[in-house]
Amino acid sequence: MTSRRPMLPVAAAALTITLAGCAQAVPGTAQPDQVAAAKAMESAYTKGISEFQTHFGRLGDERAKVYNYLYLGDSKHINEFESAKFGNPPMTVVVKHPGADDKDVQIFLHTPNSDVDLVKLDSRHAALAPTPWVSTPTFQLKDGFDPYLMLTSWVAVKLDGAITQTKLDAPDQQRRSVTPKQGGGYELRTGVTLESMIDGGIASVPVALRDKVTAEMKATVLPVRMDFEPDWRFRGFEVLGTVPGDPQLRIQLGYEVTGRASREDFPQPPAPQEITAITDKDAVAKFYDDLGDADG
Image (cartoon, rainbow, N blue to C red; front, side, top):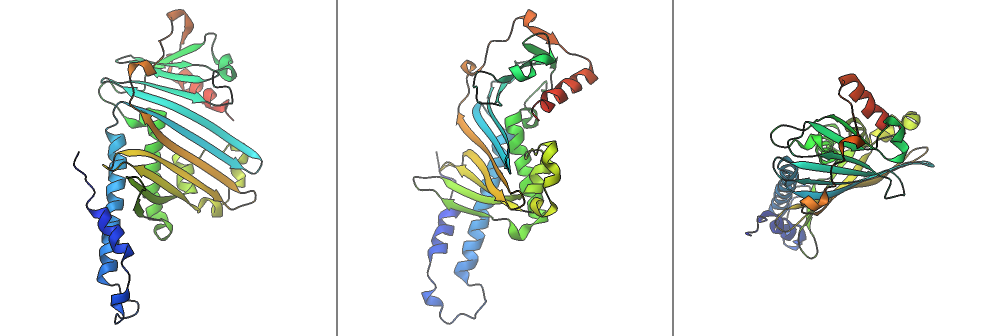
């Protein structure tokens, strides 16, 4: 594959040039090498963000993992998800690991061209239905795929929105850099405010703890790292940082591409007698609200 990275080596080279030949420069004046480096860096940053957006706008057959860890004082909120998307029309599965027992999971399954989504309840949510599985009218599109409609890719779309919002709210505090990685590929660095993550729903502060998150804490810009292959294929991102406060908040949110999806990544659909069908619009909304409320 032909490399699509002409600008980044220019940026790296320009950033390492010494200023020995600039002894007569006017203090405070940007020199040609600095201007070229800044332009190359901005071009590489724009390239990386564009590839990140394109990856999810045209999501292919992919297996992925999302982790979301939030610690506020002595309280912690931990969730891990695995997902797979395969085929066209697509089939999707998201497996939620809310606790230490990897076998006690929730499964969200959509099969191709189905009019329903299937949810397998874990033990903490078993009281929501008399059967292990629940079906609801599907949220998926009849044609194509919307990344908003699968939880793991939804997190990425929401992070993209948080990056854009932070550029508007705190442009001087948002890092915008790209560096080559040892062994090949690129690492992009940027930032998002805690407020933009909360507003986007990707920093889930439990209701009982929300009054402890102050305006000053929300204004904190958290570092974001994105990883790309040498050909700019997206590999993952991570938001990792600590927000000062009383108590302080630590957040770690990440997405990892774990491989190419296949049919073997999907469970067998349940038998009809294992499914409780919920069709009423209000009942469906209540079911998903209860499913979330049980997490705290």
